[in-house]
Image (cartoon, rainbow, N blue to C red; front, side, top):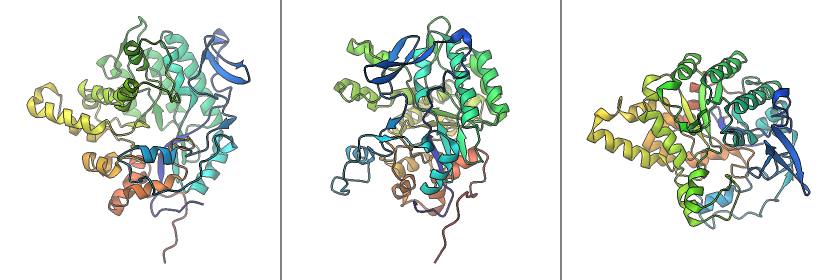
Amino acid sequence: MSRVLDFPVFDADNHMYETTDAFTKYLPESHAGLVKYVQVGKRTKIALRNVISDYIPNPTFNVVAPPGAQEIEFRLKNPSSKTKPGDIEAAPPPRYIPSIPAFFNPADRLALMNELSIDRAMMWPTLASLLEERLADDAESTVVVIHALNQWMHEHWTYNFEDRIFPTPVITLPILDAALRELDYVIERGARAILIRPAPVPTLNGSRRSFALPEFDPFWKRVEEAGVVVGMHASDDGYQRYLNDWEGSSSEFLPFQSKRSAFHHIVSGEYRSIKDCVASIIGHGLATRFPGIRIMPVENGSSWVRPLVGQLTKLYSRDPSIFDEDPMVAWKRNILVHPFHEEDVTGLVDVLGADNVVFGSDYPHPEGLFDPVTFIDEIESLSFEDQGKVMGGNLARIMGIDPKEKALPVPATV
């Protein structure tokens, strides 16, 4: 049992592992065969339109890397981390473990959350992040398979499990009318948050454009009216196309590939895609046109925040007329940031304020935290009030939950 904190813990970044029928159970006959699981030697792979993807090495998730298996590695290689070489002595974890039921269904997950001292959690899909980019040239198929996924998610997880687990259905935007229908579908079934891919939206003619442009305003108006939180979880955002242009390659995005060029690491290390995404939300005026929308980039880290804040502040001081309003006013009103555990979290609070930072563990993924509530140690220098905001209060507020309402027993005081 993890230590129970004196305030509610609302984890912004938990993950489900999808079952192998997640994309296919509700796929209509018209699109039969769009998604397949195929054998390649002794391995099972996923294929979309008969093209095998290596995006996730084991898309069945029958065995997975242990939760937090890379936590120490990420801490030690990030210069912003509070953990330094020599601070931790630990035996390496096993490379793989058999998956447990808590990774696949909400009832078992709730029991595990109790053991981990997590009051509430956002629950993001894992494999689903490959869908939109690999179907970018087929808007109709994208819409169909995303709806099939959302049907499966609602049946398997619900969109609100006992007011403690909040799975996030996906909304894809290439066809605006379809996006509006899907948004209504998930809201009617209790969704409190949705997942929008933080990337330009593919068009029917093969080009791409920002979701923050006025043509998408009917969608954002409905989002604002419904009060749902807009989660923008890291995914295959399509930026591999630009890397391929520079490197003379045609590879797909492979998040677990270790052998990459220095150029690849330089570009990827900037988290350029989420920086561009937030720049568009502010620079294209979406945040100003819809001040009631709450947007939360998740698992994109925070290394991009300071450079973008500096740029916005400099541009606004030089020529305020290029913005609809002070860009930092828009940011602090509309956008909350989820930093990685190994980053300078208190420094991020200094930049954005405690009201705009949320905790997320990435559990049960290997690059996340083995014991999620240990994130509190990263922010021990903050006031008790600000710790409570970061560890759950801020997310509870935008999700419409009492920030002081715990789901777990309050620890006894001596």
